[in-house]
Image (cartoon, rainbow, N blue to C red):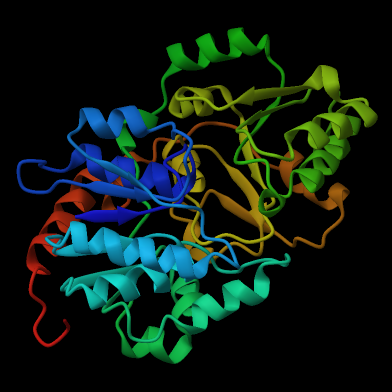
Length: 368
């Protein structure tokens, strides 16, 4: 099975893929990965250790489409035996799946992980890629109903039976652990302080600028509050400067990329996530598996609230209104494991389902 991604770093969809990959019976299902970056991803070594292969393609950029298409055609000519190509690069999946269709790949999955594109200079090209999707895929996956409608359209989403594949996590690894909480809070020198947590790439989508404004409003009323943020990205230096400008540097910890997210969440008291747009973010599933209460933007699909512990706040609300939501919350960790399993957000059961799906899709009648 070929999984198509940008780069296997510790992002949401990449973590979801690894959650499934680890749980699968790899004597029956094996993943290879087509990535679109030259640099090594955080998960690359683990992929190799699990028996997967990594194939590198150039970044998809306007102006280099023709060369990219040629490389795709060559790849599938050299690797003709994949029964399934599962593409996770949103609107750009149309390009990969076009080549896969021409090569006779029987099952071609386009998987939507976003509900918006945002505004940037590449938007016209990305809209073109979404338009070009047409009939290149023959299976349609999404992390939420909204994400499916965004990529495939409302009518196609209804008629093509979009499969909502839950962004499942290893529920047991997130269950409340007092020892982990004590260890992490000691690392942070948190003591009895109120710890607000966030995990996400430092990019425009995650809205760290508003996040700091919200924390400033909280800190004005709760001087003992502290903010911890895990992740990396090109906007981190600007966010660090803003924290300094607001006088928050002593109360904010930038943790960088971490491989111990379950433990970090044990140390948090509340999870804050004011994103501009999302599909169905894995990190919010993780936070709920850890039993945290979450305060998130109302741009995120209501499907995200798996446990009843998510409070949606209007993105346009003032930082003070967000602070009201945070300070009006309770901060205990609940045991949500059975609820997560019942709602099919545990990787063990969902990996079995996905294995069956892959094995049953080798020759979908009339779809090649």
